[in-house]
Image (cartoon, helix red, strand yellow):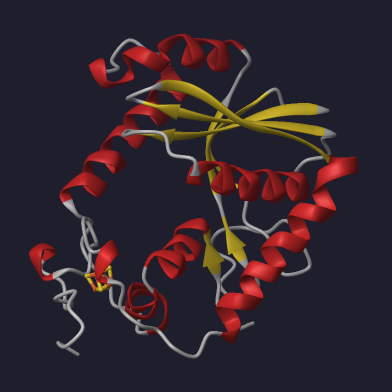
Length: 219
Ligand code: SF4
């Protein structure tokens, strides 16, 4: 197996192949940008809320509070590991040799024949999140004996957005094929060019104490 992937790694590959190279191939760790760190802190607050009640949630969660309460009523789990092997078998995040795609659901509830998977965004919702949630559905079908998965994004800016409904019978094979093809595209890549259009908020940019100036001529 050439790479161990995650949605953020697929996203980095699509945004800027040089960023993918710095992160995944060169394994250069970079501190999160200010925006990323804020998102990490808010994710922790959501996790505490799902596990222990909503009393201490800050204003950023006002728009999604009713959805959080529904999830808690249905005994939701937070930060659920959905990592899989290349045989589409469930594994764990720290299966250093076997994991093929790592995934972590912010919230899952309704476990059984139908479940809801949630990704929390402290910022806006964008159409690209549909793709992310489709991948999460594929990972969850590998972990749960469920027939149907509904996916949602909980955005601190726009509220709850339903991003898709998937059934095992109609969608699972299509999802598997799609992410296998995407993986093969990444694994076959030979060139890792910069994309200066993607530098805003990039953790590898010099403005974030990173090694890349973002231009075409700085190596
Ligand atoms: S700073 Fe720009 S060019 Fe450099 S890795 Fe980040 S996105 Fe790519």
